Image (cartoon, rainbow, N blue to C red; front, side):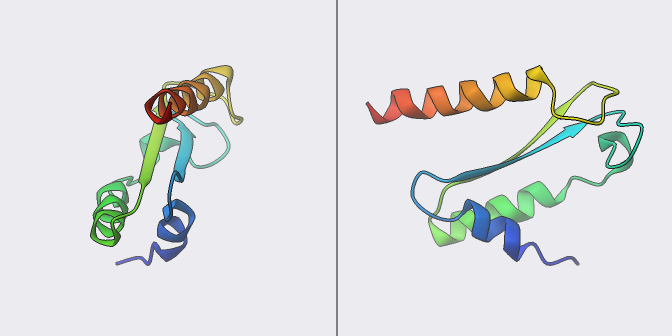
Length: 87
């Protein structure tokens, strides 16, 4: 079992969220289709037990090795939604 303490620490606190972005067919490395991303639930459970905020993994069907406009739009919409809830 791996240790995901850094992910929990990065997500811990009021109004904090860590989002990992992967491309499904990244030609270089970290292609989501080749990864076991099941650790997402372990991290979310750890955060829940601490009464803290959020962690998410976003996978886009893409063959790029960079953060795409689609990733950025997902980040923006997530931030925008959070701001609406606070106001």
